[in-house]
Image (cartoon, rainbow, N blue to C red; front, top):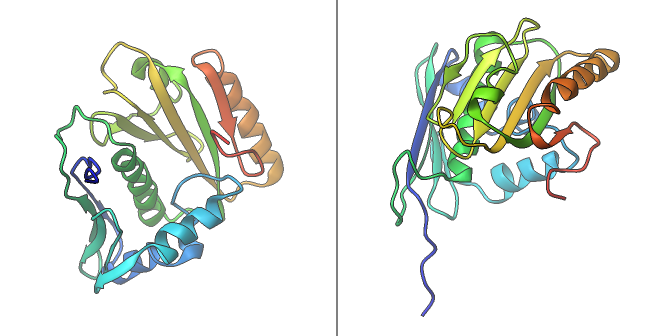
Length: 224
């Protein structure tokens, strides 16, 4: 007998300063998805197509679902809306249980809200930093005020207007080191500005994280 795959339930939602119709376009139109989903690497276009075109099923107006039972829905009015991603599960849940898909959605929804709330001009370009460090160390990467979204994720906007999302495998307040993922989103940067930012972030990240790495468009995807 095949054993059922163990899935953690989750329910993640965020409010955005945009109308329901615009938000639905933001989660279904591939050009807009590139402005908030994931981070730059050579396989991002294929990943977006796989998740939001090939594997997504429209369940109702402004609601899509996937084979694992998860779904994304948009609700609200003409000026504000909410985006909710939810999945029922068959394994113990709770904030102490780490689930990579749940935490990925938390990061991506923060990036979506930044796009729609601030409406930065230009194309998004990202830096993706990985390595093992503590939450305390990760939150010294920028001097802005960090806001929490769940126990493992925090985000801020630095003095240059770049969105920084930091997420770990354990709660940020724990003292132990863990694998961290930091995504820096910048909009409208030319090549020279982007490369300068990449060098700056590499110098910040390398001393504080074991096995530190930084990925941008054209680099191999993490783990490849």
